[in-house]
Length: 98
Image (cartoon, rainbow, N blue to C red; front, side):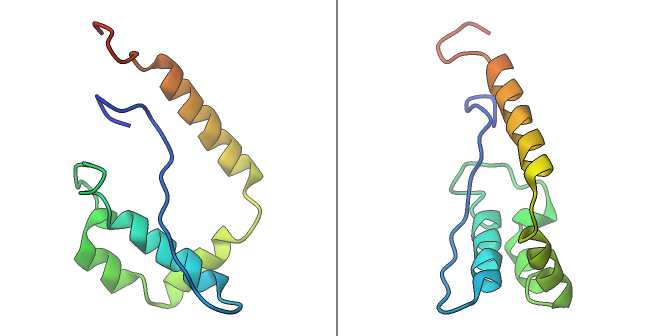
């Protein structure tokens, strides 16, 4: 979120043919990380810089990270959902004076 937008999830997209879900997930991660300008985000971290992402996304360590994402993440996602809900509840409503 930001001062004008409530907290929210965003996503990237990736398409691969056959049994290549790791490639599709990797492409989706790269797609989203490089869309900071489109979402009017301030580029504050290396994960939002094109050169950094492209230099680090196509190696063995990146494949391990994407494989890790295929594992069940019930606790992680539930805690992130709760955090987003709390942030949205405490955010000033559009049109209010706060």
